[in-house]
Length: 217
Image 1 (cartoon, rainbow, N blue to C red):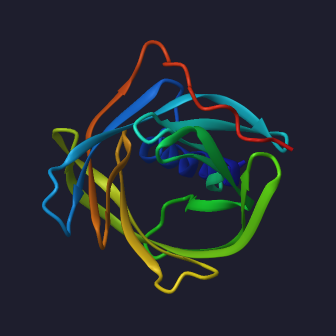
Image 2 (cartoon, rainbow, N blue to C red):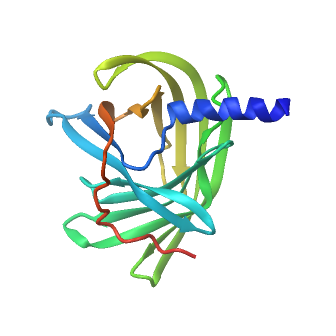
């Protein structure tokens, strides 16, 4: 019973710093660090639920880029199973990326110094006939809690540092992520981009998801 109580307390930390709620909506400001383009806003929202391999996933959708991710959370962490992207200038055409096993994106409980690894296959699928599998691997580390400015206020945030690579990729992708209290992803920084949370809300009604469901098994 004591162990179960500890696990429940740890899981609540994930709820506070990684809220995944129906009708949740985030607005981010994106800055390109290596050019003079003005910053611009991007929106992300939870638009519904989908079953995949018998598990219930939330649909995390970005209407600006017409991209969708299937994500779920339990007492061990947050996982990403699939993604769907629109092809630029061909909005009617999408391709899916299916991760096997699901990407272990965030480990719970959030403990400074913890490091975890992911290794799997990302299968890129299109038109129901094309399938291009590629090996991917990642390493992520909890860097601890920092105080940040996001969404117009000061908040504590867990900082994660991630490294990602795949077959055929010459340079390892590296980035830092900040997950803020009560808002989830509050900031992101890579070599080329800086993303900051502008606002977070729970909408009274969900906007319809214009992306079709990712192919399910």
